[in-house]
Length: 129
Image 1 (cartoon, rainbow, N blue to C red):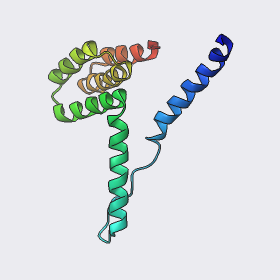
Image 2 (cartoon, one colour):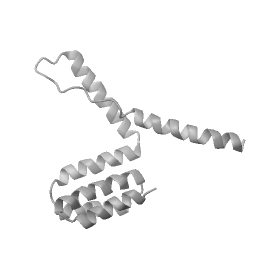
Image 3 (cartoon, helix red, strand yellow):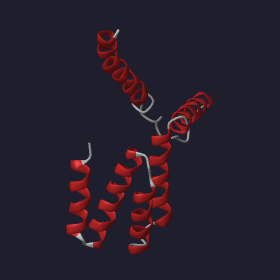
């Protein structure tokens, strides 16, 4: 039984990961034009609903989306944004969200000209397992 579990566990894990990735591998519909027909509008709506549903069903994806939206809300506020994400980094328990926060901190530090701190965030990402 243990041998069977040892063989099937990696396969099940890979299938689960591929299933998660499948939701995001489709391209968004093309931008609407002046001659948008009702079928194209319906296709765009269905695509949007499917992707929002995939994000809502996965805690990691929801957290990553929240980090992206927080960065958009904070804009180019510099140090207040860095302080917000630094606190969020240590409060977050999800490793996927922590990686997205580190990437966001990297961008913010790079924009502020603090290359040593930006490189530190990249180094932390490289060492994350």
